[in-house]
Image 1 (cartoon, rainbow, N blue to C red):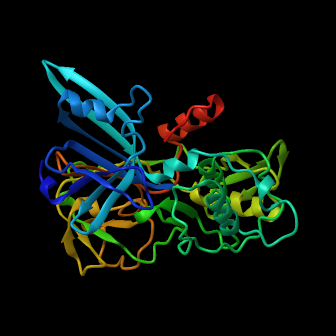
Image 2 (image 1 turned 135 degrees about the vertical axis):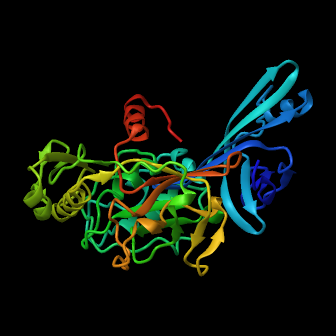
Amino acid sequence: MPLQPTLQIRLFDNNLSSPTLIEDLTERVEKLMFSTSLNGGFRSCSFQIVVDTGEAWQYLSREGKRGYHFNRLTVHEGQTLIWEGRIIDIGLNVRSGVKVLKINASGYWSSMRDQFYTDDAGTDWTASSGHEIDDIIKEILTDECPDISTDQTNIAAGSRDLAGIDLSSKGYPQDLVNDLTKLSDSDGGIWFFAIWDARVPYLFKRSVAQVDWYVWLDSIGILDLRQSASGLRNAVLPFVGTTEGTTQTDATSLALYPRRETKISLPTGANANTQSDAASAAASEASLPRQRQSFQIGGRIYSAANGLQELPLWRVRAGEVIRIQDLVPNSAATPALDDVRTFYIMQTEYDATSNQLTIQPDRRRLGLVDIVSNVAKASDVIIE
């Protein structure tokens, strides 16, 4: 496994305030993969280890014992945390007498589907005013997300008053945050939420003020830049329940392409300003043909923050900006999302066996995960 010895994989108990190390698994781990995404932060991690019968017995839930489900798992590079989460799935596979445990873990974003939130015991968001997105998310985390850090200093302040929004029906914090971050803001900014190192929550707007990572074409195994107009929508009608708001359009797109309409469903009680913000942002995001194809990097990648120093591929996270440098003309000096060469990273997946990093650019899109999540909500299936 290339570069694998540089990463350390450690298993702890489930005591987050004072974790106890159970084992350093570094020398035993095979087929390690981990990912990040927005919304979410640390998304998933999987690997396998060879075990004997006694050890397999300890991992699995049996006879009223909890096993290692929900135990904390970390991936480090020296002192740098690369991934953190909790064990969700444990599978025992036995072939020709060899026993293999297959472990799947989810980042602590998944813990935001443990408990329900309702404003019945907290703030009535339908009353009064001055209810910005950060106020609501902070209360949701404080009330119903015990596994998330109480450090809320990285939750950015919103500028749009969401007064009137109705959160009196029980909902998972994860679903509520996903809905809230679709609402944009008075400046048209695009919100994202993530749980990163030490389970600290982050609420932030997409920024492309600088490029974080540079890569050259000779480091990319397969590059298939595919701009699709199938999702192009330049007239967006907001709905709250069955009540429609005012359609918002993107003038630039309408001057170039046919008028293509869609509608978005917003949380109950979303006021007129909130509806306008969300619809305008949605129209802007979908106003042009967008890059839809992921691409893989198997060679060198360079960090702008470290003076174009080469760093391991596993350092790259969702929420950062990457540029394919030799697709950029000399005149293109200012960072900007252009769907050709400069991308905001929505999802990463690192495969330690092949030392390959898969990157999914660029904006929110309705992919398979989104479709499955929507079906799951209707059937009460939990998607981590």
